[in-house]
Amino acid sequence: MDRPHRLGKPIDGRTMSRPLGTNLFIMMGLIVFVIMVRSVAPDRTSPGEEAVNPASPGQVAQKEQRSASHDDTEAIAAAPDSQTSHDSRSVTPSFGDPIDPEALERVEPRTPLSPIARAKEPEKPEFTRLFRPIATAAGWIEAQGHEIVIAGIEVVDVSRECQSPRGAWPCGRQARTAFRSFLRGRALDCKLPDEAPDGPVAARCMLADQDVGEWLVANGWALAADTGPYADIAKTAREHKRGIFGDGDGDPLP
Image (cartoon, rainbow, N blue to C red; front, side, top):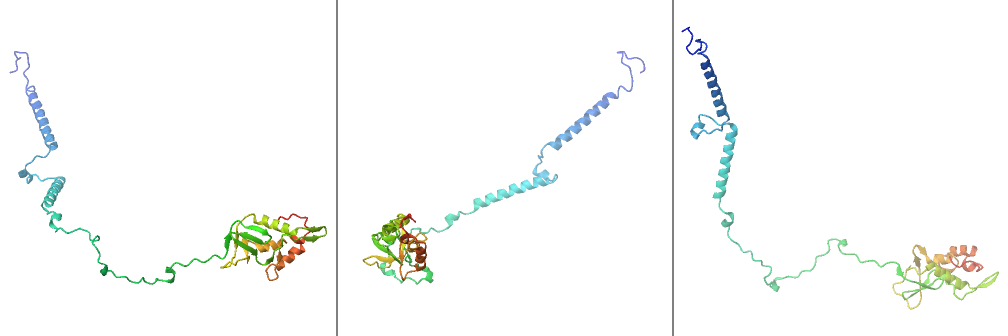
């Protein structure tokens, strides 16, 4: 056995064991490959095999959900139609039917719940507004069909002339001119009586916040009546020689 081989290959016991080791290594690799493939492949076990190989918790939850959905679908399909189970009723309106007049009863209205429940009658304004007044004299006004004399004064006549150291001067006309300049066509608020008389009426008038009678007396273009409220104002105008108490050479405008 130790003599040379006829083909030139040596005869050695170690050379016979090399093919066997290689085969064992290949077989072990195949076994490992099969194990890995089985672990990755999906579970295709039959119902009979589930008892032997129990399912995971996730698989059990999915099966229970599919089973509940199937049961709900069967319950809805088996439920009777609710609309068909009710009896039909009439929906014809009855408000268009004729009404028997004898069936109606007329009653008196109830009393108000409180004194303020009923609207209060509007109060008559204290002053009446008169637009575009015309001064015919200092203290004499015509507006909207009313002829008004300012209350509490004595009107200076237009034709009156006043004496001064320089002679007579037309104080009546200057008084009217000054009064017209004061009004300038603005509306007056006058306190008129409820029943207007046929002739002129004495009334208190206001131009905005200014008392017209007070303005006339304070500037000396009217005399204060004995029973009026402007006596003290007239005294001051006389002392300062205003209006008709002056010399007539000043500006008649206020």
